[in-house]
Amino acid sequence: MVHLFEWKWTDIANECENFLQYYGYGAVQISPPNEHVLIVKSGDLPWWVRYQPVSYKLSSRSGNREQFINMVQRCNKVGVRIIVDAVLNHMTGAGMKKGENGVSSSGDSYFDSTPGQETFPGVPYGHGDTNDWRCDHDIDGGDYRNSSINENGCAKVRNCRLVSLIDLNQGSEYVRSKIIEYLNGLINIGVAGFRFDASKHMWPADLKAIVDRVKNLSSDIFGVNQRPFIVHEVIDRGGEAVKLEEYVNIGRYTDFNYGSAIAKAARKEKDFSDLKWLGPGYGYGNLAGNDVLAFIDNHDNQRDWHPYVPTYKNGDQYAVCVGFMLAWTYGYPRVMSSYYFNGSDQGPPSYGAESNFATKSPAFAIDKSCLSSSGFVCEHRWQAIRGMARFRQICTGVGVDAITSDTNRLAFARPGKGYFALNNDNSIWPLTVKTTLPEGVYCEVWSGEPKDRECTGKAQPHSTFQLANLWRFISEQKSDENANRIAIVCKSIPKFCVLQLLDKNFMRNYLSTRVVF
Image (spheres, rainbow, N blue to C red):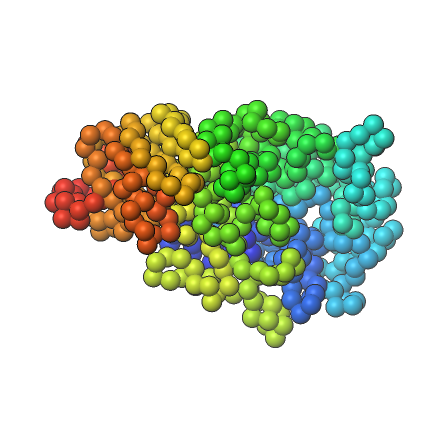
């Protein structure tokens, strides 16, 4: 899955058709499609306005209802599923009123979030649908901690306001019915699932009552009796009043500990070889793989400037982290696709105030990356990351075997389908390994990809069921900043594997009667 953060619906539809379907991306997490508040701050429209709902109408910065439906249909047609970021915990920030102090909305709905007289007629919600009767103030920082003097911390985290946002009462049958109506409407359109924003701030029993009443996915698209994919945003790094274990019976959870473990290895603060144990029970918060959404960074924590949250700003180190995530089998991975930002509130690339901050479209270079002039980073299009996304798709259905490790180095097979090796050390790693791969010609997908019966990256024939002195071979490519990374994939064609080329003439002759990809 890739998170196309703040992309327009028309651009996502194009990306599904022109790129994602060819590189192993099976789903897109989209930004919240609901009508939201509009507030200009420091001459810009911040990204977080999308997380302040005014109604559940499909009228957002990314596009209108017709454009949303068209996107879902086009993506489904090429096998790429849409996962909606659903904001169900709250509405807008307290003390806002449409038409006053520069406050507006992305649609035509009026709203007033003045505490005590809240009204959101676009749903409709009123004061009685909020949690004001339980808690009429913000969550305090200390409420999040689990301690003997914080007996009510769990209730405060779930009933009080998250950064002044008007908290909804999901225990109310009426509120539940409106949320279910919204989710079922999206399923009718053809979405495949949901990321529930701020699940940590909602009671698990209330969420289960809602999820149990959400309908099955459209049978004409997904088959009969298929349930929606659901993942809960639950930040739990230990010592929290709210525990991630409370949510695993109603969907996956966002594993914030996963990315930190990989980042520490990439920074050489722990040994990369330790990651051969990354899975259930590895440190705090890593439960069964079927419960985990794995990721390196997301739209929130990449703005925290935390050393253990690498982002696109870290360049190759970031690619190493994402590449390992895609090669390893633990959890369901999500790749972040960002836009360039300098400030935490900065919104997506736009045409400015004169156009009501209309979002720009990404533009692409010949090498398939995004042009930086468009303002979009498009990490999912980086050669190393898109190659590893394809690697993951091809290796689906097999585990990890033949693990070889050394200080800051780790290599392993995806039996019969692929081989991954990573040298996070500055010295050569002379290595002879059993790849488990059949004879063939292999393209090294970290630096290139199969194209027109050739390989755009480094490659070599593989005819002995071994790769001898693998790291010596690639480390000699001094001009290549990726010279100490290699990932190899095999397509299941008898006696033929896609990946690695040393002699283009050999490749051309060998493939004279075969088609790659």
